[in-house]
Each structure stands twice: as structure tokens, then as C-alpha cells.
Image: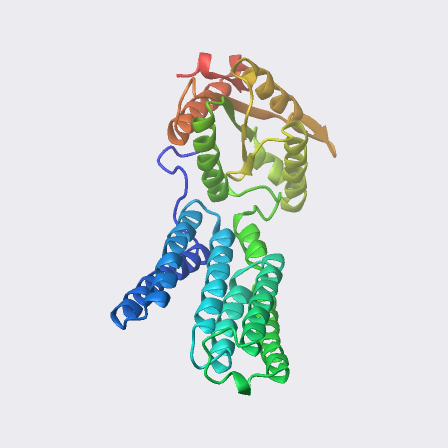
Length: 345
């Protein structure tokens, strides 16, 4: 059973906290950069920093909604454009400053982004750096040392940036994999591959917010396996894990297209599916039938309760309570292991 007092987990994991800290630090740095340049009379640089600062705030919005990679990707691209524009206005040209600035961005991306997103940032940095160097070579920047800029320095720059990116990426791949892989590992149930309890609640909360705005109905189904502890003792833990995987497989098949599906307890599963209100009971019965089966000489019987959104409840916490109550009724003999909102306490 789900404990009603322990509902959606909103506490951020370590990676989420890292992303949020990075967003906050970069945004504050942009505001400080705008202020300092304004005080020093560097109006053009102050304007550039001031225009970039709201994009940092936008990245915070991505992070708050759980789109951590999008937040970091936006920050990296904003910083790349910012550095390029600052370098073109820099009297000292695009030499050591370029290596330091672009190198920091590519390391930042290597450590926090998935492989595909990292390649996108690396490509953007090469494009931006090429633009800065070409502009410098053709006297289109404010550099006072343009005569000392040549193609060899650009090749040297690319080599150094390549080393930064390669070492950063290899380090993060060896240590923990990409951000996307780390998040999937943290959010996944190790036995069935479904969302774990915390990930299910977090995803369900976001999905209900989306459905609420769209005015769309849904159904939350909670099911457990009858006498699963006894099954565990009879067939052993390894075989029992195989049975859980079979249940997960059947849930994926019957709930194909359901946005949120997870294992929320030892023998408990939950599905949040977008269905019409008059189809809620039929969908719940399909789930019940699919998860009642025999395999390897073992008979598995599921017990199920469901609640409709928004008819029975319009928040995740109250929807969980409604579905829990229906599941409690399903455990009565006369209910035949199926409970709905019409026969709940």
C-alpha cells in the first residue's frame, strides 16, 4: 500500500542540485558582469551581459520543471555567444582569453551534458571561435594586436579546446556516464526497468499539471500482487524478480502509450494513463486482466484500485488517496480483487 503521508518526492537528487547551483551561479555572474561594465563605462559590454542575464533566468525555469539538460544546454549556448561577442570587443584580441573562456564552457558541457548535447555545444563553440578568429584576421574586431593573429594560432586553439573536451568527456563517461544515463539510473527500478517510486511521483505530478491545463481526463491505477511474499518464499527471490519483470512487461503492453508507469513498492505498480472518463473502468479492467496470469507453475493474482482525474480528485495527493482507498476495497473477498471509485470508503 502507498502511505498517503508519503506522496510525490520533490527533493532534488545530487545531479539536480548541481544543475540548479550552476544555473544560479552563472545567472548571478551575468548580473554582476553587467553591473561592473556599466560602472566602468563599458556600455556595450554592459548591454551584452544584461541581455544574457534573462536567459539565465529562463534556464532556471527549465531546471525547476525538471528539464535539467535543457537548462545546462541553454546556459552553454548563451555563454558561447556572450564570450564571442566580448572577444570581438576586446582590445587584446582572441588569444589566451579565448582559450580560457571557451575551455571553461566545453569542460562545463563535458561534465554535465549527455553525449549528443555535448557534441552540439562543442560544434557551437568551434563555429563561434572560428567566427571570432576570422573577424580578427580581417580587422573586424577591436583588437589592437590583429597583426599577431594567424591561422596557426587558430589551429593551436582548436587543439587545446579538443584536449579539454576529450579529457573532460572521458573523465565523466568513466566516472558516471552521461547526465541522461545517470538520471535514468537514478529514476529507474533496477529489477523491472520501470520508474521507481520517487520518479513515478515526480513524473505523475508534472503530467497532471499538463492535463489540468489541457482540460484532459486520466485514470490512476494502483495494483499489487496477492500473497507475493508467499510466492517469494516458494519460488525464491531470483524467480520472483523474474515474475515482477513479467508483470512489468504485461503492464507496458496493456498500457502502451501511458505517459507514467512505475513500480512504487515491493509488489506494487502504478499507471497514470490519459483516457476518457467513461473508459477509465474498462482500462483498469484491462490492466487487471493482463496482470492476472500463470507462468512457470505459479499463479499470480493482482489486486487493483483506480481513481479518475479530475472527477474523483484533481491533485496527485488526493488522487493517490482515492486509488488507495479503492485498492483497500479490492482486498475484500466480495470485490474480486477489483476496486473503483464507486465502491471505495
